Image (cartoon, rainbow, N blue to C red; front, side, top):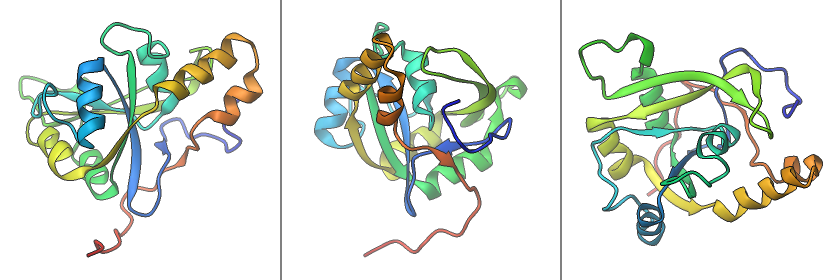
Length: 188
């Protein structure tokens, strides 16, 4: 098992500090290059349309096939404000309950994945942002964007070489994420 701490069935685990949480997304090179160069999402990314954020690194690399799937060749680590993330999670509607209306924030809990993409016995959260929530993600919540595709490929190389200990050492640190805690005041 990757995590030494026993997992809750549904538990947000993430890399975070007092002010920010890291989420992951995979894009094509045009979107990734523009975002990394600007330090924020800019065209050809389209704010307002549905975009899914994932605080689980292993779920992200499962979804994008270790950054090998078409239009998902680049993996970005996006640092966003915890206040924005918490707001999104609190207002999310489970995807299974989305009817005719189109909520701005949806949530899905899918099986977490291991280094070989095997399903684990606990769930990992994905948060879909559309409309105003997607715009706020781009305009207000994003604090930094880093292209981590080389790290993704390095970890995958260790997995292919069956050096799982080294692969695990390179994984971003993820721990249980506490929702609804007071946010520190913004720095001037």
